Amino acid sequence: MRYLQCMQQIPRLKVPGLGASLSGPIAGLPETPISEVAMSVFGDPDVVPLWFGEGDLVTPHFVSDAAAKGLQAGETFYTWQRGIPDLRAALSAYTERLYGIKCPVDRISVTTGGMQAILLACQILLDPGDNIVIVSPIWPNITSATKLMRGEPRYVALDRKADGGWKLDLQKVFDTVDERTRAIFVNAPGNPTGWTMTSDEQRALLDFARKRGMWIMADEVYARLIYTRPVAPSFLELAQPDDPVLVLNSFSKPWAMTGWRIGWLTHPAALGDQFAKLVQINTSGVPHFLQRGAVAALEKGDDFVNGMVERCRAGGELVFQRLSAQPRVKIARPEAAFYAFFEVDGVTDTMAFCKKLAKEYKVGLAPGEAFGPGGQGNVRLCFASGAERLSKGLDRIEAAIKAL
Image (cartoon, rainbow, N blue to C red):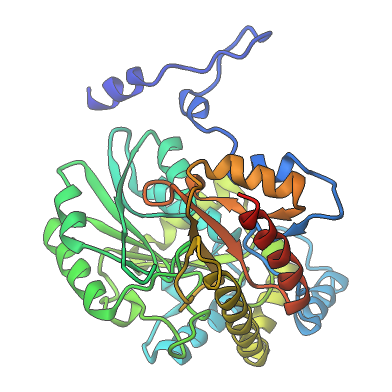
């Protein structure tokens, strides 16, 4: 009965010119504001692109060469649903090396990018009418995935500190949970804020989830991109193997592999068969030869990751120094991830502001409204690029701010 009631609450989508309707949740998924800004100047080579979550480094050769070798060896057939054994073993060893914990291969499932890891997690957890409590501002894919499963996203916005940084009121999270809450979603270090959850906060949230019988979905894609310690705190350091915790990760950011679409889930071993079925239904698995590149990234990529961290540290400091000198800008020194998320006094419509920057000043930023509650009034700049590109973009941003 509950399922039917929820289904009836979402009207099906009518498409002009078609005699048949589409799934109801599709009607509630508009184009993301970031894409809307980017498409407004699509194809203009003069725009400095600082809107998407990637830099200007190509994937390192030792990763590409490993994938090419696999391709040439004929690794082009259907493969293991949850990842080739070599990659899952490498991920197990990587997790132990990073966090000092044992993580057997039966707790690991390879996915087609971190975004698919989010969707698979929602597919395995949600029934229509359930909700997920989401710490925001947040990259919007968790919102879309929740809605596609006919669930309800509920937000708890980070609070802004006096210095422009961010903090979480855990009590607000606890108070937002109700009997229909299936999971709490936390992205830390966070996109777009760079906010990082402390170990004490993670422990308190894990204790709460255990008591309430709900899941934690921990997006730890930016765990290596932190500037105050070697790696960000992880729920993996605190959780028992059978705790209700799903940790989502990706090769995209640390190893400059955004276009490869490879990620992974760390989960209780008992969920392995269920995730295998979902992967089979969604994609049948990540191409075998691409996974060879992922193995190389894990086994040979520490120097590259360390270089990426230093590159982003320098980029973040350059952006902070330039923008904090503008009297109309409120910005905190980035401590993790590779984004500056800042306010410009007098700018309330960040979509209009970002479109103006793109068309008239030839620099691409992401509007804060794309990231949900807490994001309004801010704009996001990705500083994963080199100093030359960043300086060029900053010159144009400063000119736009001065002209306000």
